[in-house]
Figure 1 (cartoon, rainbow over the protein chains, first blue to last red):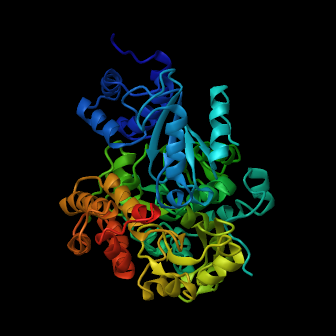
Figure 2: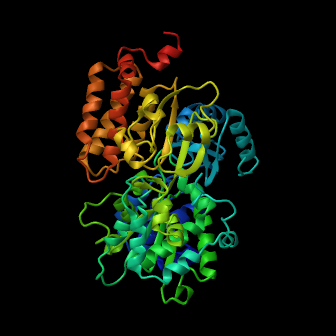
Figure 3: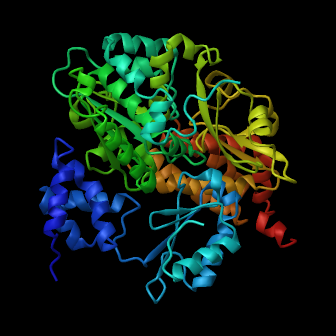
Length: 164
Length: 421
């Protein structure tokens, strides 16, 4: 099925493009907005974006594959991203990651069968004073403990994406 | 006690910011000649707070005076150096200081367009900035003919999408133009040929946020804060085994001991200080003895063999395995290398592999020498400093904690010890 950008998205794209002297500069912000709607950036979406911004497809693909926030495949409704860098590591991040895998019965990079959760480990999220930190979609969950992590999971199962 | 210049309470909203005298410095600046503003900032000795420590006023003065056409101002809010979380706090608590600092800087360098490049993960902070810019615009501080001066300045928030390398100035420019974040060769320097090929100044969030106070109270006032050539206050972000981790604004030159004991409440219960990474993960590690009395400023930390960097102070307690921690850092740099320069791309990968081997108890003493040699071979041989950022922790960890690496080479791994072997 051919992927088509909505008229609404195109109108929004025109606004974003107007911030820059060249359209191509809007590529990354627009890809983020597209991903927010679609959940991931499919090959067809890259193609549509290339046409919209009059860029070679290779340029769009290069960008999508370079930056870690772009998902090239669907992820769960809640993307659990556990920081694995030094301060979080010392504060117990490896244990949290293990606990998540055990609780959800999936490995890193996998999505639960019900489509609710995907687990990833990520590099420094820039919140080291509140280590260990996990980002769920765009929300930060800070100073996590195993107990707190369980409560967050429980909340998410009930559709509540809010900081604790 | 020096009063806080950056981290203040109740100034997040524009009304609170006004109540604290906000946007008066911009009004004052618009009545001055741009060259006089640059002189004032030079006099203040304000240096870049992102890690490199380059004098801000000097950077501004590099914009060619006769350059025709657009010039750009970019705020680097791509905070990603492990151990660093000050800009996030600053943008949340005092976004208008960043915006006002940018408006003043733009006027000084003759720019009418600015961008705040913020890391993509900071979605909440991007929203805070968007709202603050809208509020500033509604009051006439951003946009056309600011405060009737005839000066125009448009300011936009631009989100990144996850890449540590984009914190490097020229990689950020590439990214802002919509490309992969691969650093550019210098020269040409951004002041001559930067964003969209135009003269560009880029400063860190914390650097720009200090500008309004400097214009208000004068360069001499700012230069008198701190210690010697390290002027002003600095945001220190402390993570690791301390009672109260967080961001603390203190005059440069505060001792590590005072930061730890007075600000952070000391080490966490039952923890003993083993090592300190003083300026973000890229800066050479200090042993507890080296760190204890050291003054946290540009010159003192350089004399101690490390760097002030971003002010990300990572406190490592006894019991942490230095091989494991270096493995964590090596994985990070390998993951973040943009792949452009061979020494970095290959060096980061090989160092990570050798560290994995050591950590798993399959390594040898020769591996330790090879890791060190690879670090040495990377230093200064690449387009940007990411290779150095990997090499500095690698070389300093091995130099200062070699017995731990040797124990791993003998098969005495942490996992093995934990299992009672």
